[in-house]
Image (tube, rainbow, N blue to C red; front, side, top):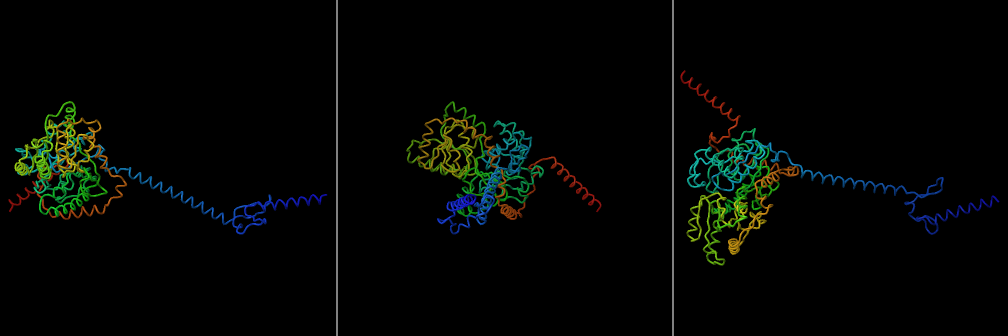
Length: 562
């Protein structure tokens, strides 16, 4: 009986094993493992019988896949960390480049001064006045050129205006600020003057001395060079700007390449030379470059940014608020420096075309032209020769021309026309050339750009027959100096990413090359009235005077003894 039960158990066990072999994945129809299945499964004997497990070679492949997945995950984490770090570098600002901090001492150096009513005299002055907000008295210094020769002053100032000293000119500038409603800013703002000379070729003032000697080293913090290329073309020998100051910002106002292209028979050669010189001095002497519009040549790609950092005085906006409730009763006018490069030739050509065809009934339209400058006589002769209906006036404050309805500006040599912004603020129509320098103003509904003489005539005729629209709250704020200063603070900063992308070696080569090229220039001593008076400077001057007096007494004693 026991043998029968044992036999039956054995048979059951054998049948179960055969059934497992048949049903196993690696088995063949005969119940045996298929060829190559030994690489996938291994039969191991244990207490519970045989069971299938992973072969060693497959385990190694799984380990390899696991390591590969872990490596890929680690690589992705590293890439994410790199992207996060790169984003942080774009966000972190170098502290020395943040001019919004109220404890910074700012020096603004420009190439023109009132009473020459031009953009490079008015805009830097207003910028300096607004930057005095929330700062200590004397924390902002505006450095202006002083033309010692009366002949030079007569070329740029209104008729009959001549200054015999820097004190007279400084008082004139302060009076203008008070008249513009900036009396408190005028008291907090400090002025200094450098010796300048008028250059007929460029119609501009060039430095005749080393400006860096006027600046006490202990006060040198932030420097804003208004027209950095202009200030450094014939820069006298001296300490480099970037060595003296912790942060140097260059604001490019003028398209001098357009000026040089129309002056002499050697214009192409002069333009080529000037293009290279501009790159050399701007790269070598600035940390950040602000171009007012895209019309300016490329100077230092990794340093430059295009941004309108100019605004208009509050008086212009108040005039615009007044004329939102009443009508302008005047006609068309133009205001600007009396230079051919300001668009006078194009304006005369358009007026000649209108006079000849008279398609819009504007042939007898009287236009008033305001401005002073070296080309004034030649411009008047040309207008008289063409029998154009224009009347010339001396340069005046643009705010005094509030009654006109249409401001005309055909110039394409501008970088950013200040007078267009002022006219828009006064709620006037503006008929201007369609040009990259005017792109900022296209968003204003009262701006009517033109490309051809016919389009100019059509826009002018429409503007003379219709009233301009009042400014919206948003557009009005965009024209304020407060908004312009906020834009300047934002665009003049340098992030860690920008600093790492700089071509520092190229910058040093440009600065050294230009400095060596101008090293042998001899300059006169700085006149005493032009020097910035500080406590340390006064002590130094007193010590020098005492030393000279001692030397003089020693010399006299030696002469008597002999």
